[in-house]
Amino acid sequence: MTTKKNTILISRNEILAVINNIAITIGRSLNLEEILNTVQEELLNFLKLRKSIIYLVKDTRLEAVTYRGFTEGFVRDAGTINIGDGPAGRAVKSKEIIFIDNIASAPCEIKRLSTVKGIKGCIFLPLKSKERVMGILSLCCEKQFPIIKDIDLLESLSNHVGTVIENALLFREKERAYEELKSIQDRLVQMETLSAIGKLTAGLAHEIGTPLNIIAGRAELLLSELGEDDKRSINLKIIISQIERITTLVKQLLILASGGKTRVEDINVNNVITSVLNFMEKRISDSGIKIETFLGNNLPAITIDPNQFQQMLINIISNSTDATPQGGKICIRTYLIKEGVKVVSDNRSFISIEISDTGCGIEEENLNKIFDPFFTTKKPGEGTGLGLAITRNIVREYGGDIEVKSAAGKGTTFIIRFPITG
Image 1 (spheres, one colour):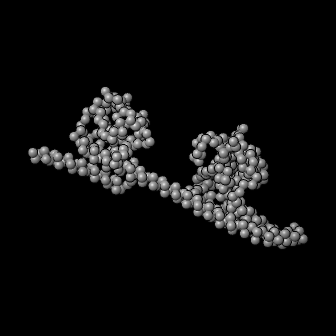
Image 2 (cartoon, one colour; image 1 turned 135 degrees about the vertical axis):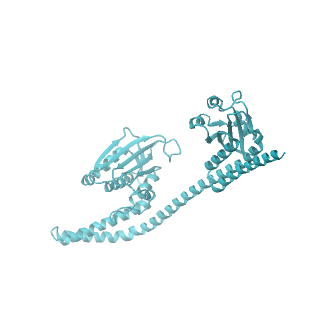
Image 3 (cartoon, rainbow, N blue to C red; image 1 turned 45 degrees about the vertical axis):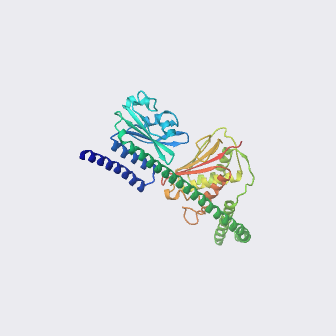
């Protein structure tokens, strides 16, 4: 009698140890995969089994998420089950444990592979949270049923683990919702920033424009009177160049703050790229940089303001030129894409424009800042930090997407995608 009591006590202690270890994991982390892996490890050790698969309910199907004792290929072949099909699917509908003591003679999702793997029987344990089944734990036995005596443990863990799964999924959803909210807040902050810039520049354009024109006009008049040989003409030229720089900055601010389209039309992307390269030919040539183009044939048109499209190309190519040393290369590619674009929520086709350089690249910590207004890695006086901010606004205004890939010392690639017309 004492021996029997000791055996019962030992068994209960082992059960408590299993539940305690699972509880410790839950207390330490709400990561779903970590919790499910712990559940499997503890149960397999306690029940002296080697193989198991945990499925989660997703709509009308069961999908395998974690497994032990199987290869990835095995789980992939048997990894998705319709609810209601086979013992696993029936366990979901009935919310009860289903035992298959002879897998060779019973219809089962893994019957086709059981002979190879030597599985004799299976237990399909519904993981329940209250009355809702969150998933299925499939315990595979290489001997016929050593674990029926532990049915109470399985029933207890079914409810416990099901509740944990539901909490972990809720936590995951809250995390996702938080990230989406944070993204929306960041966009709102940026919109507020651009709105403030718009109000500021609307006043600046008028207040600064008139005196700048007067100063520039007087400086040019004095320059014409002095002549090129007069040493004082150098200072006048500096004054005129700096006025031009201020005027350009004000124009860029107005473009950045402007939300209205001006002259929208269907354009041929390749023709505009060729035109921009001709316009920038001298600057690129003086930099000692080679330009390569791989422009797709028979590309459909996109609908955009051609001036804004030109401005976007000039901004990116100018940045690439500044970042690329003499002897380097800038490569421009265009091609049509119909799927695989992360920002596309429908079946539209897109034209992709890639501009790559062999320049200094962008430090990883700066990659998420390069489209921010006034952010620049150039030396003071060499850049306004508005070019890429303007470029992104133009791309988004016409339903497109812009992506950058770069690493310090390994060059930079900008990928711009615009929806085609029609």
